[in-house]
Image (cartoon, rainbow over all chains, first blue to last red; front, side, top):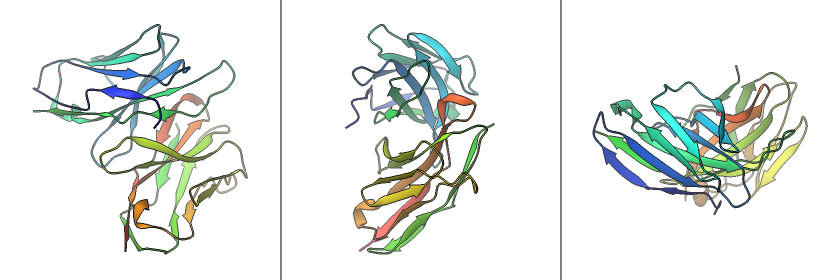
Length: 115
Length: 113
């Protein structure tokens, strides 16, 4: 039990639609990041939010966007869904400072299937 | 950029066998190294970590030593159990990309009774 909760756990969308995935960080954590894990692959970093601002982004197009709220919960939005977006989306949280990084804890993930 | 290379799977062992899963990395600076485990249908759980050279991370009978001279962080366990069956991911953080984890492709371990 990591204290990071995600919703929904499973969903099916049609190509071209939009999806919003939600994450509640572990209590006391100020940083949230999102990863995409395709079947049989390792997770790939999408982006990270620190104190409500994006402070790092992986190699994902602009149709992947996010938000972090004052209570440190977060959303991942994906527009114009493509079949290749089918994957497990993992949210992770941590407590970061200006000088050090700490252990990153993952949620159970949201399984997205695009048909 | 940073990268992690893991031993190709799948790995199949009998209960009580010795386990090694190799992991090597490429990074600038001094990254922290991690092993995460993913049980079927679940998210990632941190198994162990090491933050500097020669550190040994350990948990639940698993061990890995941070070897800077060989840029390696091999996972070992002396006697595996059926319940250890899962996918194991080696990952690094830092070394110029402080904010993100870079993962290997994962190694599927199956332990038979």
